[in-house]
Length: 455
Length: 112
Image (cartoon, rainbow over all chains, first blue to last red; front, side, top):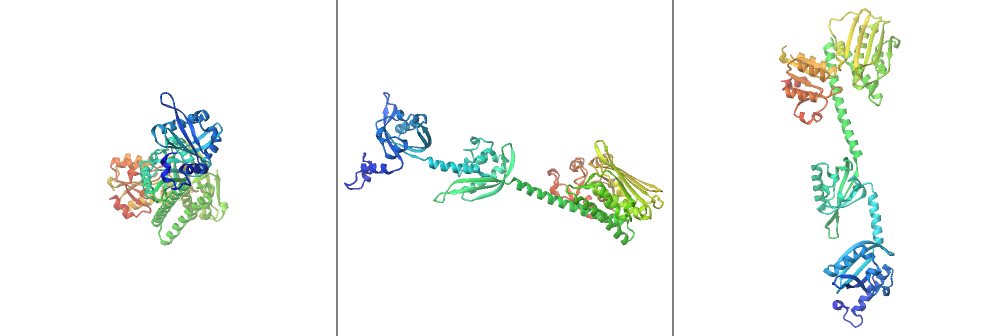
């Protein structure tokens, strides 16, 4: 063997460098082979001839060493040319540059993953190789695991280039690995939401590269230009020297939670809006009741009754879970409290559901009609009756409620000298075009015709 | 009462509109109210207005587009609403806003 081994050899006559070399290659689990270059007439390397094969090498390729020595690589194992290995070996001999690679080999009974290092030796090659199929199988298991998790996972270089992405992440980017692997993370499909999204990510990558664990909720883009909220994290990976070597970005879909949060905020806002509107309504009722009241007792009575009327409509509204009020229930709730006997009030009509706002408006109108009837009209006498009848009719494609209030059997009705709160409210409660209200002070009994759009 | 005191109230809640009308009348203004944009538009076309009080949301429409038209025409207005400023579209963020329930003296001050 060459003198290169001699200065490391033990200065003793017991072990020669050659013996040490051979002993080592008998023991090592790695395959070791040496080749001599076979050159054609033009000097180009046409094949490699075995000059040494160690025990492990023979075992790995499944051939006896003496069966290979002196033979030609491309003759015995032509798969080396197909896999581009032969070209790599030639390059090593011609350039002197050591070559290392991991590859899958499947030719003529040799199957598996190999890690190979080739170094020039004279006008030939020294080849060290190991069967890493088991390691690779372990890698595959890890890979399968990462591909199967319910999360997006990747690997970044410290400067933010995407080196790896698991299957869910690749699928979310449209399914083509080549469109994302090797690109700056912030230029990948997921982050093409807006500039702020990309800038935030760049900052996060920089922080993680400085050794910090970064975590925030991010809105990203997934296949089909859909938006998704993820709980996003970039974790730095350290080597034994404490340096950051890689970054692991990961994200879990939290869109539903985000939607629920947004929904809750909307509900709170809506609730606040309703509370303020209710307070405004109470303010108006108080103002209007004060105007109409002659005494504080009058005010106490009318104001309290109106608040109860609103509460009654509200109760009906919350009894149903779809924010609708059946008209029959509304009429009964507003009118019956003012009748000494239920039989004196008759209701007749198809039972349709009213939207909340219309139910509130109609509830107050019915309240004013009922209180008026109980003070001055049919419900103020012993035998008077109130008949409430309604139907729904289409007007230009919009359903309209036609409601008729008819009092009979009460004291003789006189046309009032001034328009009271009730009359004004009734005339005003109609907000849509095509709505109308007519109050007739027939001496036989008051009547009122209402038309209200239901959309 | 002169034409210069004409105030349009765009409000679909009859009770609130009535009370606003009464309070503004007591304070020397000449209010008229509309519960729909169509009606409000009609009033805007037919007479000069010194001020417009807008609810944000009517039964099935918002008053934002109408507010933009008022801006273009140079008619002063404010939003009177149970919502706060965050409910206004971006281009109307600088509009005057008064939250319900209303303090009438503040309203009169803002009408100017």
